[in-house]
Amino acid sequence: MTTDAPETRFSISNNSSHLYQDHFSYILEYKNNSNTDGFFDLELLKKSLNILVRKYYKPVAGWFQAHNNGIDVVYYSDKFNDPLVTTQTLDIDYKTLSRHVHDCNVELLVPAASSTEITFEDNDIPMIMVKATYLESNEAVVLGISYHHSLMDGTAFWTFMANWSALCKHLYEHGDVAKFTIPHLPTFEFPDISHFHNPSKTFKHPEYILVDPDQYHKKLQPGSEKIVETILEVSVEQQHTLRQQAREIGVSFTELLCAVMWKGINGLRLQRNPEIGSGLSFYTCVLNSRTRTGVSNNVCSSPVINTPCERTVAEVAALDLCDIAQLVHEAIGKCTCEYLSSSFKYLHKQFLQELDDTCNSRVGKKVMCAFTCSAPVKCVVASSRTFPIYSTDFGFGTPAYVHPPYLPYDGFVRIWPTPMYDARSSNAPLHVYVSQPEHVDLSQSPLLAQFLKYNID
Figure 1 (cartoon, rainbow, N blue to C red):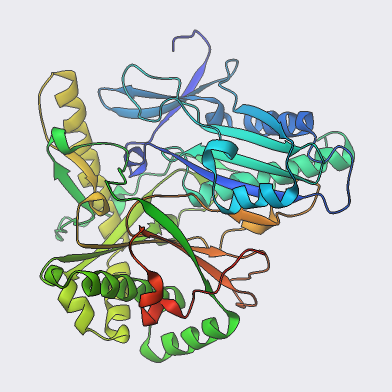
Figure 2: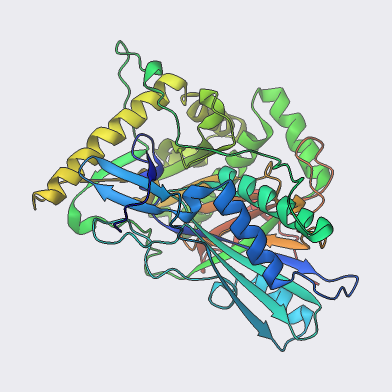
C-alpha cells in the first residue's frame, strides 16, 4: 500500500513474532438468559470495536509490510484497515447452536482470511476479523474472532478482548465513551532485549529447525491422518491432589500436568506401535516471554518461545511421572533472559538471510519451530488457564462457553479454564483439549482415562 499520510511503524522481526504467520480463532457463546431486546446489537459491536481500534489499537487497523530488513507493522493517522465484521442469522435452536460451538464448527462460526502469510506482494492481510452469529429466536449470540498471530499472541488477544468488552459495555450503559477509561492501556513493539545477551555463553536452540524449501511451509499441516479433539476434565479434587504432589517434588502444578499429558500420550503411542521405542518423543511448552524479561503483558506482540525436551519413546515410558515432571521443569527453567536474547538474535540473523535469499532468487534453508517436525510422539502444551477468558462482558453478561483455537495437529494440548475457574484457588474444573489421530483412544491410558469425564448435556 502507498499513501502520503503520516505513518508509524514497528518491527516484528526483532523477536519471534514473524514465525507465527497464521490466524488463530476463538468462539465465544453468549446466552440471552433475560430475553433482552437488542442482545449484542450489531451496530454497538461495530462502533465499540472501531473506537477501540482507532483510539487505542491503531496497529490493528494497519498493515504488515515486508522489506529487505524484516517485517514491520505500519499504520497511519488517516488511513485505516478496520477489522472486518460479518454477520449471519440462523433459524436453529440454542441447543443446536451450542453443539456447533462445542464441536468447533469453524466453517459456520469463524471468519476466514483469504491469506495469512506475509509476503512482499501481499499487504492486505487482516489483523482481526469478527463474525457475529444471531438466532431468529434471540436465544443466544456467538462471536467467532480470528486474529493474526504475528501481531498478537494469546496474552495480547485476551487483553484486547478485555478492553473491547469493557468499552462496549460502557457504551451500552452510558451511550458515549466520554468518561471511559481503558482497563489495560496497550503498548506496541516488543522492546529490544539485546542488553541481556551474554557473549560468554553459547546456547543451542533446539526449539527451531532449518529445513529445505521443498519441506518448508508457514502453516502447520495436519498430515494424512484425521485429527480429533478430546476434552479432558481435571476436577477440583484432582487439581488439589496434583498440587500437593507438585509441591512434594518441587515443580509447579502446570509442570506436573504437562508431565501427565506427555507420559500419557507417549504410552498410548508405544502401546499401539512397540517398534517406535527408539524413536523421538518430543515435548514442547509454549511460553510467554514477557514475564521472563520484565515486559508488561499490555505489550501487544507475539514473542512466544517454545522450550523443548527430547527423549526416546522408550525412555519416557521407563521414567516415572516425577522424573518427567522434573524434565519439564528443567526445560522451562532454561528459558532465561540470556537464553531469550540469544534465541531472538539467532532468529533475526536467520530471517535476514531468508529475506536476502528471496530478494536475490537464491535457494536457502528456512527456519521453523521444531514442534512442526515429524516425530513418533509429540506433546506441545499451551496453557491459557490464567487468561481472563470468562470475564469478557460486553454489557450482556459473561460467556456461557468459550472454545479455544482448534488446532488439528498431532500432539497439541491446550490447558483451558471453565466458566467458574479461578487459577489462584482451583475452585472449579479445568479442561484440557488434546488433539490426536482418530485411532488413538485416550481411555486406554491409565493416566489420561481418569480425566475422561466431560460430556455436553
